[in-house]
Length: 210
Image (cartoon, rainbow, N blue to C red; front, side, top):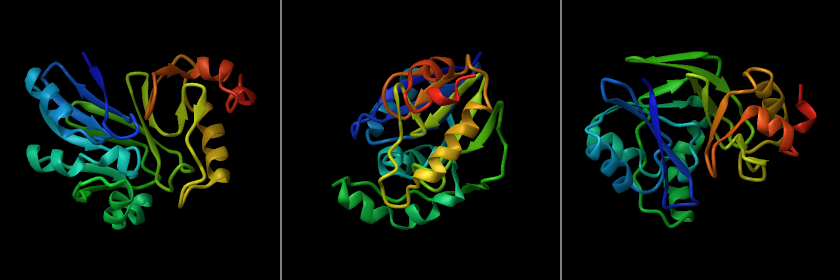
């Protein structure tokens, strides 16, 4: 049975998620700043990391990616539309005064890719640009790891370099029509919620209520 743990990172209270199955294989989603938090949970639960999934390339979501990659010898999956952000990783890290090495993205995801299978983990992929050019959500077992697309009561910023309000609007409309309303949303910041709840109460999504 799949389980997941949410860990709040040390930069901008970003959410790190660690998924694990009955074999103790685990996938790290959005390893933000705070490698020790990640490693402590993995060692305490005797987990075996097999991959990293990044919803997008902003520093608060991948500050520990290189350290995880080096420690566990695992691949990193990310949408290739965010490659420019990776190329400017050191500059972004300096802006946030974060000491973190640039990760090597071993598996670039095409924006049209709809599924990823990693061992026993089968994810449905959804391309939702706006917050960044390569934002993606990953759905597994009716749980969606949506990064900074949707928050409880809000949505991701679109006033950042390479963000696009127009793309965000298109992504939100497409997203809410692509998943069941009882889907759980594991957001990039803040508490988890459900798509149905956000369609009822989130001012940015209420117009899409069905």
